[in-house]
Amino acid sequence: AANTVPTAGPASQAAFHRARQLMPGGVNSPARAFGAVGGTPLFIKHASGAWLEDIDGRRFLDYIGSWGPMILGHAHPEVIAAVTAAAQRGTSYGAPTEAESELAEQIIDAVPSIERVRLVNSGTEATMSAIRVARGATGRDKVIKFSGNYHGHVDSLLVAAGSAAATLGVPDSPGITAGASSDTIVLPYNDSAAVDAALQQYKGQVAAVILEPVVGNMGLVPPTESYLQDLRKLTAREGTVLIFDEVMTGFRLALGGAQEYFGVTPDMTTLGKVVGGGMPLGAYGGREDLMSQVLPAGPVFQAGTLSGNPVAVAAGSATLKILKQDPPYELLERHGEMLASGLAAAAAKAGLPHQMQRVGSMLTLFFNDAPVHNWDDADRSNRERFAAYFWGMMHQGIYLPCSQFEAMFFSRTHTEAEIEQTIAAAETVCAALA
Ligand code: PMP
Image (cartoon, rainbow, N blue to C red):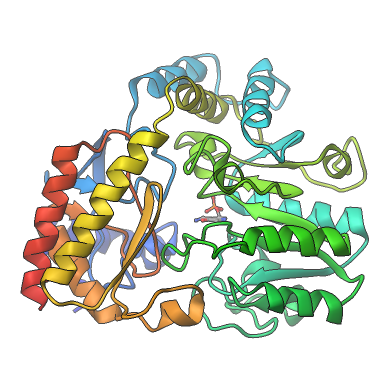
């Protein structure tokens, strides 16, 4: 049945059938296989602005935005021009370029915590490397992370990563040794007393606290009042490196990310998604004394054949330039409020228990009757209802993230008319679900 949901067209069905014989589950990253909602993923042939077109020739309003990067909309002309020009000069040299310094300067200017930065190829590489630097710099082994926070598929961080309930150091995947995760302490999100207690219990042993300052990976969960400030104080007290994983929030909530938005400066920051303008690029950075630990300035090893790739750097640099010159954040806030209140009203009108949670252009409609502050709260959401809502919206031409535990993203190119169209679709779908 999983492969016969009628909402995917015949061309996507055939393409998925072929892909499943070639790649595990037919995909190169699991979320896009639609496992959480059941059914066949749409195969995409074209994207422009707020719209996706699948290989059956159907058009959808896109609320995934490549899971975060496409804040300017798909195929922004200036980004495409920069990528094209860079590709014509050669796609990779394995040698330094001035364009890397340009992008590094843009990042350092924008992100309060970053004094030095290293470019990598993904968010996973960024978090893996930041953890290594924190351990190298402090000489400590343990890391605190929070259940429901995802930091990529780093062995030591793939613990209670947006899917499993909070447990101490039990990996989420076969193939991760107990040793790789045994120095990982998992705590509930939005509970600074738990962090205080763990820092006391493991005094002098905790290298880093890593978190999503606004969580996108258990659905959208904002930090509660003073949570980020509390973590800042506690980690400073213990000499523990505070790492904000801003792979989703960086350049999205504000040019300087969640740390600018909330006015709390961590010691290190990891970036991905928007920073690469839709190309494979991540970054990690922070205080000069920490980043000077990285090879060849210091002893902590980290490298990459394609790191600082000229085509990826061109896409990222063009994107950040536009975001700085013509900031979309007020517009995104206004449109976010319109979208969130409309989607919530549609659910309310149909009498469906729900929670709308939003920060800027990231949001989630939880089918849950109480606010979601952490993974245990999120876990009480009605997944079956979400799956029905997802396919209903798809049928109306609205492409949502295919899990209750993923945030919706929209871009600067989503117009008021398109948001109204989305809300009208939600009214139809919610009425049918009631
Ligand atoms: N950190 C966060 C907060 C993320 O959302 C993600 C990806 N969704 C990652 C890290 C990993 O990034 P990547 O998929 O580029 O490896």
